[in-house]
Image (cartoon, rainbow, N blue to C red; front, top):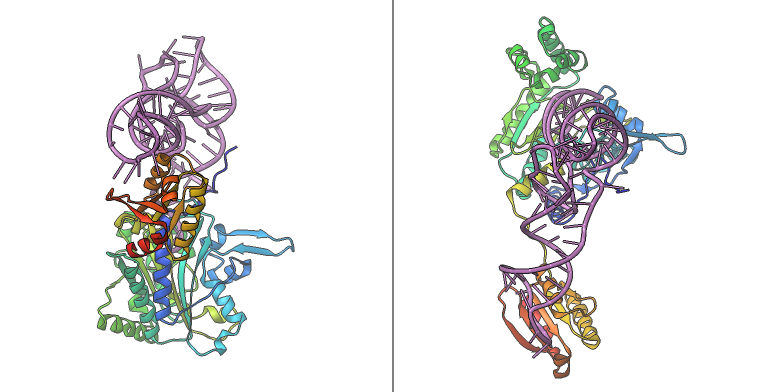
Length: 417
RNA sequence: GUGGAUGUAGUUCAAUGGUAGAGCACUGGAUUGUGGUUCCAGCCGUUGCGGGUUCGAGUCCCGUCAUCCACCCCA
């Protein structure tokens, strides 16, 4: 019986783990500068949180959630996204009573029961940010610029920023009806998926990739024409800020977000170097969600980054160098081994990565291991050296070798570092 | 949930229906206590699993499981 990780669940380890850690470190750094505080919410929440937050009609809720009944008979769900739990926390802890805005970031696992493919997993990691309490487009701009800065700091380039406004509770229904009126006439000619979308979410038809559907929807109503004055003003305000700071973006009137809670500003960052799942980050406003959870009317906006997708891009563009120890101490004989352990521990105490031989095998095999793990120096202590109070140092890359008194070993390596 | 492709050694891959192999990796050796390059040797398999056809199946057929890619949808 051979065990394997569950479908769609991946182990993350060296050498990739270095990329993960680097991205996470960059994120913490950038978020801190923008005044975003880390928030850690549970992975498991009451199922209602997600039904209410994401929407009963969505695929996520209808077929992708890891939901089960706990021993107390409650229906609980492994979080499929991060926003709903953060909003739950915001409302539960009455965070609206703290100085506005409240800005949070999180990083962690999400779970969706889907068929895995390139860039899609059942357990995946997101880095997300959420800002509560500001209606002004300056907040939209800040979030977008922070995201752009983070992606750039992580080492990504050539990404495509797409931007749209899908309107508010006032103007979106009007637009939706206009779309239904437009599609309704030739509905039979659209693909089966689109006919289904017509009922579920007509905005999705704008996203269909079937050539015939793309043809048919030529001249369909465009969102910008249906935005109410407030939404229009807000969106124009955002674009003005982005333009004045020369933040690159492309307007995409067909950009639709899948989750029900989005309002007004929506955005998506894509790469052409991924597979079909090419979105590396996405987000938008969700001004109704806090109230939906029983809190006061609170403006909010956020985004989430797909870690695996970013790491995939970084693996293609940059070579990861394996971390290697500075010193490998090879010893011969039990007395020398004790001396070796002492030196290794002293080096470590000084912050130097040092490896030991773990019992004396042949010098040949010890040096072979030193070479294989990429140690920069080998320090050889045999019985002869011990008697003379010395050690042999060897630079593994240059092949140079020399003697150093045992009492000066620490000083020798401090100078080399 | 739907469709397609692929499953052979740790890994990358071979093997007109006729004895399962190679490179890399790993372990050891090439005279005393010196890695990499080289040379030699060794180790490694119920050919994913279960049936069927056949004198004979890694190879053909059916089923099943797994992985990958795509659809749906999404980060």
